[in-house]
Structures are given as C-alpha cells and as structure tokens.
Image (tube, rainbow, N blue to C red; front, side, top):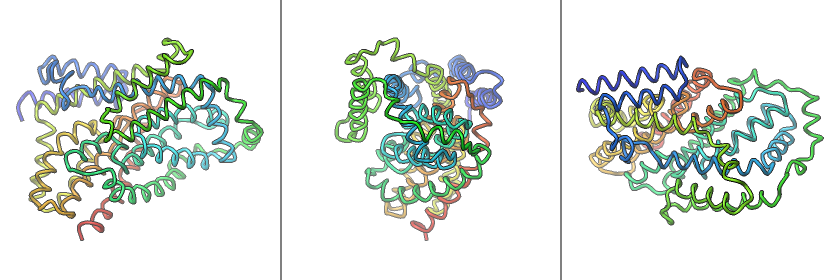
Length: 430
C-alpha cells in the first residue's frame, strides 16, 4: 500500500481508539477523523460528499431523519405508553419474558422493514416499560439492537448490504427468504436462550411493580386519537412503500422524508415539535464515519484486505466461503458494512462466475451477507442500528458505553457466525 494508505489507516485506527476508549465524545472523534482524512487528501470533497461508493450515504442519513420525525410525532399520541403497558401485561411483569417478547418483535419487524427503522420504533416503548417495572433499560436496548441485526439478515430489505448483494448477484427477495430465513429463525432461538444468561442481572422481578402494571388500562394512555390514526396511516404507507421498493423504485430515504413532510404538514404538529426528537449527534456521527471509511476505500485499503483474503483461498469454494464468512464478520465489526460490501461484491461476483455460477458457487453471496450482517453485532459501531440505539440511550440519560455494548456483542457474533458455518457447509458444500 502507498504511504497515504498507511497514513489513512493510522488516522482511522486513532479515531476508532478514541471512540472505543471514550476519551472524547464519539461525534468529536468521528468528525475529527473525517477532517484529517480530508486534510491529508486521503479523500476529497467530491468523494466524501457526492460519491455513491466512498461518500456519506445520504440515503441512510435521510432515512434516519425522516423516521425520527415520524417517531417524534407518534410519541405525542401516547401510543408508546400504550404498547409499553400492553407488553408488560403480556409478560405478566416478568423481565425475561418481556425481553423475549421485545426481541422477537424486533427481529420480525427488522426482516419486514429495515433494522434502523425498527429500533427507532421499539426504543421508546422499551424505555417506558422498563421504567414501569424498575429494571435497567440498557440490557434491553442492547438485546434489541442485536435482534434487529440478526432479523434483518433474513430478507433483501432487512439490511442495506443485502440490497447491494442482491443487485450484484441477481438475487431476488424470495432467494433471501429461502436461503437465509431458516438459519435466522434458528439463530433467533439461540439468541433468546443466550439472553437468559448474558443479561441475567437485569431480570429482577418486583411483584409489587408487576401487580401495579397488571392493574393499568393501556387504552387510557392514548392522548390524541385523531393524531394517532393520522400517524399510523402515514407510517403504514411508508412501510408499504419500503416493501414495494422493487416496484415503485423510490429509495427508502425518499419515502421516509415524504412521509415525515406530509405528516407534519397535514397535522397540528409544529415543525419545531417534529424535529425536537431528531438524534442530530447520531446523524453527525454517521456522516463522519462514512467519510473515514470512504477514505479507506479511496486509498485502496479495504480492497487490498479483500483481495488478500480472496487470494488466500486459492479458488476453493469451501475455503472461500468460510473465509468470506469469518473475514466479513471481523471487518464489519470495525468498519461500516455498507462500503465493505460495496467493495467486496465485484470480487465475489468474479469468484462466483469463475466457479461456474451454480448453486454451490452462489454460497459465496450468502457467506458475504451473513458475515457482514451478523458481524455488525460485534461492536457498538459495527451496525447502524447499534449506533442509533446508543444515541437514543444517551439522549434519555442512560448512556451505553462502547465496551458496555461490545462485551456482549462479541459473544453473540462468535456464536451466531459459528452456527452459520456448519449451515453453509451442510446445505451447500458437502
């Protein structure tokens, strides 16, 4: 690699170390790292702000912005209080039962929508129900972020890297369902069992609190029924448009912004009230992170790592699939998986074609998807959903540290990727 490439690696690792150790605020570290990348010409304004491959992913930023506005309006109706009481009553006030209910809902919704939208919707409910039952909220939020990443792996629309893989590999929505959904169901069963042990200190049952919750009437929590119905109609239309993306050809970011704008324009909610719930530090952090990772792509660092991994497999499909799975998981734990998949997909396409393009060769696409999506659980910055959850937690006065998330994420990633390995071998390679 060139001297500039090594320098960009040093800048990225320095910024990442500051984020991990929390010596400075993560937004300051990300923006500082992005600024230095621009200063040393590892990237430039054109590549950082306008390139679809190495720049800020404005689709992600505006998708988050639009959904945050919609969630902010929904919050004023009392619907989250309603859902919190409903969930607590269905779990009969038992914290572990509640966590199981919330993570299953999160994983299912993430497969149908996308994982970032799902955690934006489920996090307010989590805060309210945990407050009602006097249990710590951080373990529930961490578990939901991980469940969203696992569940989002099952479908084409569940995680942005899957869309890139589908486009490059000529794969359909049904392909993802047939090949990945069965494994994801198994992984969710394993994850639910793991939660019982990983977060056991959070499952303190308070009979008095549980009795108080059981006596509540969730219908009384709704404060504005008209606004609720208006918000739900807009949200439903937005979600339908997400699912119909292959037909409508509107990017999710465009749909989210249109939905948010229409909701604010058509209701009594003021613009100031609508944007008050936007997580501006989270959006800024994403922008800085995109610029830093884009600089690594621009200087050829990620491509060098990817090609070295491919060359090490020497054309053997089984070795390539296993290397892709574990290598993608490791890299996606450190850098955002969207530019990584964008860089790797042309290489994987060449490998698939060289292997004949048959069913066995297509296992490389599934290895890439599983590694990139499941690897996002490993660290606090490995996936967009993780960053959003941590931002919401900080905003609500219950900050989750980098290592507070990562010490659980590493365990979950190792187990899920370890289970995915024999799945790929048994189904495609043996």
